[in-house]
Amino acid sequence: MEEFASPTSWYSVFGDFTFEPELIRFNGGEIPVPESSEGPASTTAKTGLAICDIKYGGGLISMEVESDHAEYIPAVQAVLFRDPSADNRLTAGFSSSEWDDNFTVNEFILKPLLGGKQGWNKLNGTGSKIRERGRSYRLEVEKHASIIEIQVDGIIVLRHRMPISLPPTQCGVFCQSKTEVRIRNFRVAAIRPKVFVVMEFSTPFNELYAEVIKPIVSECGLVAERADEVAGPGVIIADIERKLLESDIVIADITPQNENVFYELGYAHAIGKPTILTAEHGKKLPFDVSPFRTLFYDNTIAGKRQFEEGLRMHLNAILNPNR
Image 1 (tube, rainbow, N blue to C red):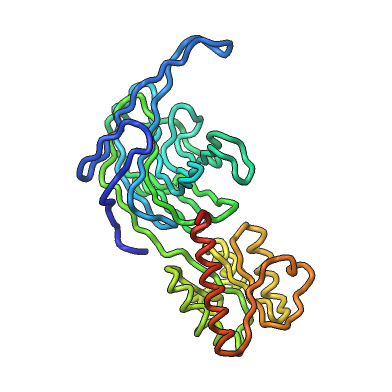
Image 2: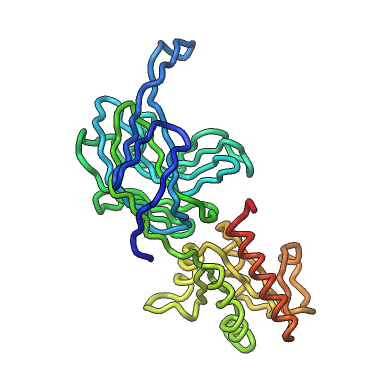
């Protein structure tokens, strides 16, 4: 994980924010809700979304949160993902009085691109709605590929696994409050997205990994790893499953019909990991994977160059899906 970095600029997408050095104020407020068949006239809390200039695909987001709330408990959440083209986003942290839980992982879908219900959807939640007025809480949200963890004052309060991995985007904060909310010391310790490479451990695949795949992955700002590089005690299959869960992308070479490779490939598909298949030219692919796009290579100088260009293109397409 990299050193903590502070944003150099902020932008309020919507909502009343004030940005000061080391301090973000969300000024909150109330919105009248007219009487209807569902109930008498009331008020609801104003919302705000602020995005900073730090690109985030995983790592730790840390902030200190304080509010002067009375009856209405405000929401303060880290924005882990935001698609600017559709304003779909993923947030995690303190939830407001609108939700039953104190801590939630939420998705907001403005334009359903892959299905799903429009509006706010709670993906996971826990905790009683007890938060002291005027007290400062250290909120930390950590994301490793599809695993999201919420910590408050050093205590892990919620862990959630997403069904898919999301590409890096700029991060920020989401607030919902009737009163002022203060966020201090917003910091991001980003990590480089991980690529787990599944292949047979033998020649020529060792050379393909070391001389072609690993350098191209690093060039794209990612970290490549194979199962034989995993150190420490434990059952190897458990290590592989953990690495697949923690990876953002999976590359699988299916040239030899290796049972272990196909098991790991099937696991990656089952947990929704973006997967790049590679194979040597001329190899007949098994029926189950033949419909998937495969990057072919051959053992020539021109073939190596074409494979490098293709791998670079596939990785960038996953990292920047809207370009």
